[in-house]
Length: 508
Image (tube, rainbow, N blue to C red; front, top):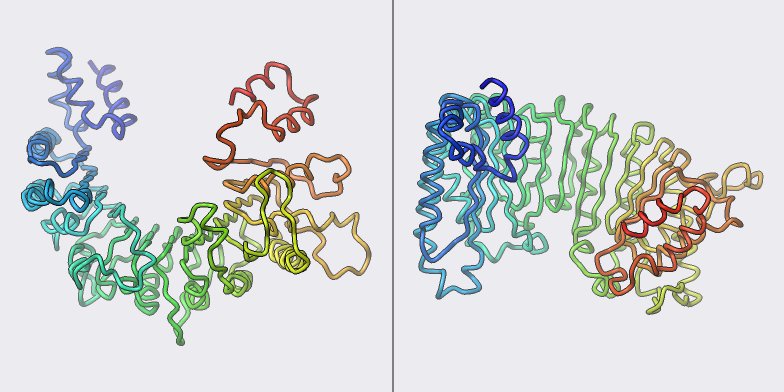
């Protein structure tokens, strides 16, 4: 039976996200298996509840009974908890679902209370919701409950539309701030450390709280994102949060939670930070933060224009251009050490107003006016100087890149082909070996790839890997095997690919 127990343990651990009820299923196979599974507390250490609002609470009642059983059978073993409650559709069909919402929240609160009685055993806690009322019901019982084993805390609200709003008009004033009573300490003393001494990873997505009372220390990972402007932390409060974990913080993600807060602030040094992700709805939002924080060991940097990311290509073409992007990129060059940065990902960063370009419906290059041609050349040189700054950058990912950004990687020849005394950077990205292009328009990515395939353009700086990820609607009606770009790639690499490999590539 020892071998069977090892097999069960490995299966439950590997498949727990897909089959969270696997221990219960195994216990129904035979009496021998049931005796083994029921009497093995380590097989009952994962609680996963996924429930949507319904016209009755039968589903939640069954989930509650299952949670009680798992808590009893797990003994004193540590627990990982995953709770997922969806209720937003009550707004679309209020007469049908609305009256059942209070009973649903009551059941959620009762289930959370049962789990909170074992809070001292919880190591990982994840809550996924789509309304702050559900957050309040699920987290209310945890309040100031001690969790000495807690390592990861994650609360994710799937509704992030209010990130673009100056005021979160969808929520009653202040109520969404009260929905998250955990990880708070009004005195910012050692109380929070005493309640959660092992907490190292915090993820808060579209989750507002009182940032002046947010007190975890010695964090390794901090992820705050997608908040309305009035719910975002003031820069001084954010710096206090970072200062409490300055020596241990390695991963920091701040997407849609920064504000343009002018003023003088004491700088915070993050000597251990290796990964930084910044997302903005306006380019001036991250400027004060970047001026107030120092990074000495940053290895991975991501930058995302959230507003453009939420748009489809047609909306992007008519959207207002963010003129502050150049100031943001200049500040990034000044504040992020180029010696340590090896990976950069830029998502939907536009360096030129799309209105200057006139894309055609086919895959040919768009026609350019004289004004657009001059602007494109200017931006191309600016982008080349920006990329040339990162002397050790080896991996560059560009999602939704514009034409000027891609052409900047090709507009400067290698140093052996350069004229003496030129003021332009010798190589756009000297150490770059891997370039990933994702969700780029066909009229932009096709000329770029053709230039890479043309033998007469071999003076272009070579890459060891070029990864292309086509957007969902890039060419839905044309099979990849009939795509001109695919055929060109296959002809170019004909000597490197066997017929079987070419056939497999066409299938992929």
